[in-house]
Length: 421
Image 1 (cartoon, rainbow, N blue to C red):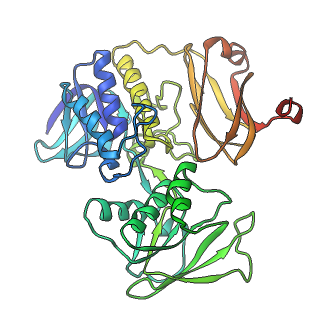
Image 2 (cartoon, one colour):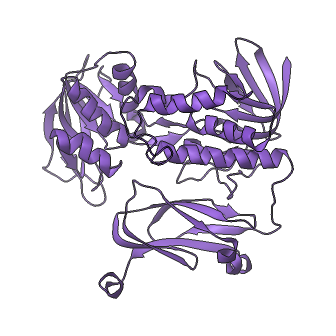
Image 3 (tube, one colour):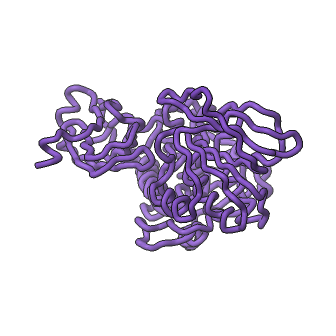
């Protein structure tokens, strides 16, 4: 078996993996191996032909393929070794890896540092347990996106979309533009699951019905989907009696959430956050195993690809520092505690004496919100569960936290005297 000894191995050549490789190379690492199981780098950006990418990072409005092309061009201008058609089959706690590809067959990799950038996958029908048979015509929104945008195949004529994630809303507009009818976008929560701009541009602008606090309770059809039954839900997401109604359709798209890809992480003994589904990390985005870092949607499902890219750049620089023996770790650590109305927060712990960037999602929408990170306060006009908020604290902001060993992150509505005066 061939053995590759490298400074840094990166698993996944999507936006996070490419950004990490470019960043590590810029830091000075020479021997970098970027592993991608697909035939080309870029991840799912190639099938995202809509615009809205790069507004923050490039200050331009790009499509997914345009965004990917810019990083592919940057990557190819370096001497980073890109291995396509390469599947990592095993990852061990000592950071050794086994992979397979057509060039080397099965081979072993011995890196000084590893970055996990495997991205995420869609939840399926079986993740949410909808009753019914198994007829044709049920797709995840991402698969439907590939069929329409890459393969040129429209999988139905009359659609119901369960879930209002970004891909689901974007696909509602996409199949509408291809001449199909979208009967409804059905969302169990009292608010959409994706960005507000997608709700407006993809649903409202095309008069596509949005049914909040509803869900699909049954699928009709044997050989092919013939329709679905939907019902209203209460605040506990329980079906409200006598609210069920049928909708005729030949296609059901599921946009019911994304799951970070962490099977390899589990094999390596990496601790995962039960709420996020990604690794538990410090502010360097290093996992509980020294030298293994996580970036992008494998860590947490981000709202924007721009944030995935920035995550990759940070991780690439930190992994390069680790490989060079320059990552500074304190003997003590601060535990980050999610408080009132906080759904997710990273990092989970603080181990250095440098500035710390927190990424926060709230549990429910709040207008006139105040975010508290320890004693640090910041006001927002509105905070939504669909959007990640970033806050950076200076080392001096954390002085008191080293004594207590923890820092609490919480969010609440500002008091009336603050909001009016």
